[in-house]
Image 1 (cartoon, rainbow, N blue to C red):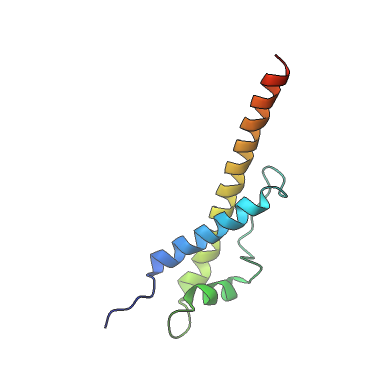
Image 2: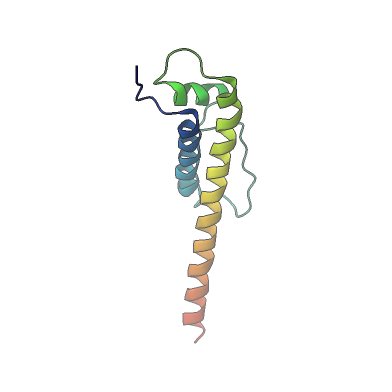
Amino acid sequence: MASDAPTYRELLEEARELGRLDGRFAAAFEPSGAEVSAGRCLGRTPEDFARLLWARRHGAPPVGLELNAPLWYAAGFAEAVAEATARSSDTAGLWLRRVLR
């Protein structure tokens, strides 16, 4: 019986993408170089976050998802904040070069 439910790896990628989405939004509010914690994901505990990702499957999520999904989320969040900070710095540099001409 084939299942349309995502694989474990796909669930981790989904966690990372959710982190990236949150990071893009938070970049306007987060200070550059802010610490990213894997303790909360979308305002959920690691257990609740794993259950959210596992929702299309039966039973409890595997412990590995509970341990790893928050780390993938935090990595995606940090990547997005760093990208936004770099873009902001590039934009500020362009603006300064124009103004100082």
